[in-house]
Length: 244
Image (cartoon, rainbow, N blue to C red; front, top):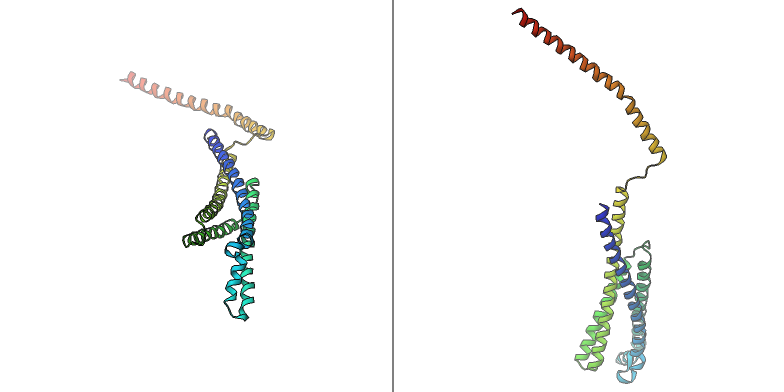
């Protein structure tokens, strides 16, 4: 059994190390895209202001088309929503990075389901961004090269988050399998005999050996009685033959 369990354990340990490394790498990738999100937001609000007015300028243009009473409210609300999306995106990516690093290094860390909630939200955001940029490029709002580059970046970000979530699942599954194999080995490994166990077994052996003379005596007595009966039967047979 040990000969079969050991190769299986070696394979599991190799796979565990591979997915732990993969988890660390993807966690670093998610953190890098958190910084990229900050840079992108700055570019959208400031750098691109001369070309397409930037986010703040576009919001201001839309608010100018509204009634005077609604202009300020809409402008503040739109800026707040944009800022909230930016903060949540950054917080989710930093959170994924921290959780993934801890889980890759410490098997006893508490398993969090928030991984998958944050990951799903980020992936949904990437898909929406890809759709928006692709649509804007098709309609001529973006240059083809800029649009293709933005789509490639968003797609890469989405793949990294997906790979991180997959690595989390694999690491947890392999660790559970290793824990089960260790339990099986503990149950099947023979218990080491202590001095008390040896003395107890020796006492049992001595007791069983003490019964041997009595058992032999009973067997001899039984054989003697059978011999007497057989001699008696033989004598009767001889006597009957002589009488005839």
